Image (cartoon, rainbow, N blue to C red; front, side, top):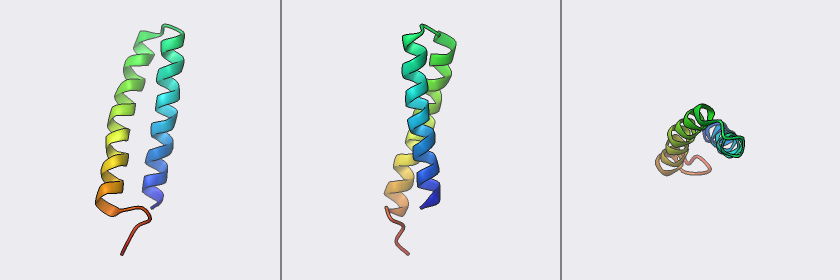
Length: 57
């Protein structure tokens, strides 16, 4: 369950970073923020689907 929380926090921070870099027209930052958002967002969704929330043993 802790892993889901960490992945979700990183995903939220990446979304904020993508929005901020888009607002400032920083395209290199936008590239890395969107990449991080895609990867960690995928990890978050798949961890919730595979392990459930909260984790069921």
